[in-house]
Image (cartoon, rainbow, N blue to C red):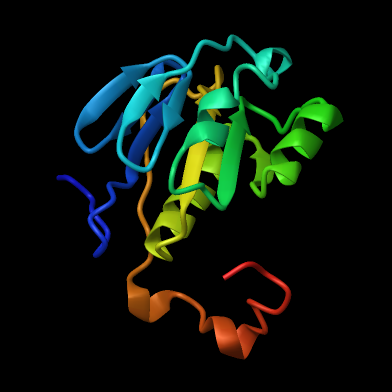
Length: 153
């Protein structure tokens, strides 16, 4: 079943060591999730995340607010100069292990944020793990939780 948020953007449906499922499409290997499309991403590991490999994310219009990077089984360090360049372009970058990055991407899409993701499949995930979001009634009230203070809207 295709998971779509009210705004019409598809959500990630699954992740495995081989790739990702989104909007019923399976992508093999690392991928870029852009506001309007899915693309394969020519990186092999976190070491390949460079200014050049992130160029397309910087060129998107309207400009994305947040780029979520999934670096495989664990959160790996990305060159600080590359992250600084993204911040200078007005794009916040969240680096996480891929499973958490997938969940973060889905959550941000559900909040109608301008978000994109660069994801490297986690080698240890042998079968496709599905992703689901809690119903809106189960999402925390951001105002009551104090979220949003100092966060970009």
